[in-house]
Length: 66
Image (cartoon, rainbow, N blue to C red; front, side, top):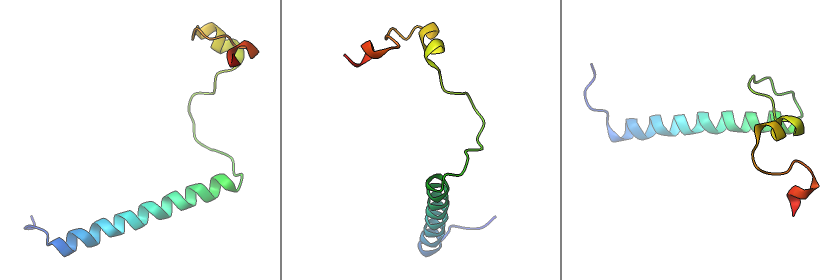
């Protein structure tokens, strides 16, 4: 097991993690702007009928805007 990490090593490690995170976020943003399909899996968005059945207490049609 290593001893305490120096302040410089800690800052260097955190800076590298930040740069890696920024690279990932830029790539993600670029992919979204490029119109590439979203390959994530998950729950589909609710359609009007399903939302009405869910009973959120709000009307599904144009009345909702008022």
